[in-house]
Amino acid sequence: MRGHERTRRDHATELTQDYAEAIAELIAQTGECRVRDLAKRFAVSHVTVNRAIARMKRDGFADTEPYAPITLTDKGKTLAEFSERRHRIVFRFLTALGVSERTASIDSEGIEHHVSEETLLLMEQFGAKQDGTKSAIL
Image (cartoon, rainbow, N blue to C red):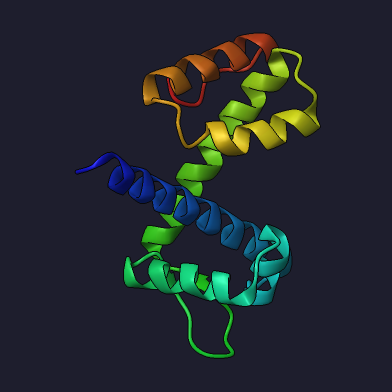
């Protein structure tokens, strides 16, 4: 696989994770998720969201019908939980270092996609030591 193909695939995976996490959050907050909600959240067009959701549906992460809310399949829910967990660990690690919550929230969005499981485990252990809780992974 060439470098640009790998980069493109990795970017598509990141987008799928971000969309799954956002869909799960919107459903938890409002009871449903619609294209307009995601377009507003990501500041993109409805067309961009529809393309992303079509890929998610093709790959088995989401279900949707015209004019109906978007739902996550079991596979999509698992991905959303995975992504949210990584985000939470990175966010906690950054705030434990003294990074402001606003900056930690922004930075964790990018870092969560590129950190190894080994590094994530150490981030979680460090965060747990700082706030006196136990690591959920252990």
